[in-house]
Image 1 (cartoon, helix red, strand yellow):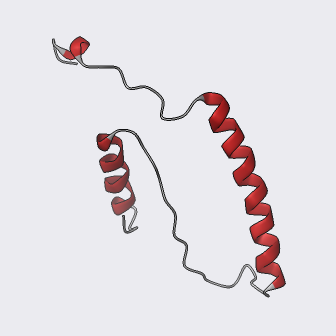
Image 2: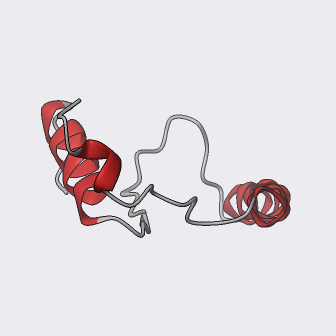
Length: 77
């Protein structure tokens, strides 16, 4: 922590706790529906599929940190 860090604005949460909880519930429900649809298409645990996902953030530094972390894991970001 630098001597002038207290002048920097504090990062605010990207979403409110209630919005996060609502979205998490919605995502869990959609995941169940997606798995059901995949089963109808004869996709099983042994099938390999490409997965694309997206992350949103309000701070460029957080996006860069996530990109670096995913790259270290061998994922393309």
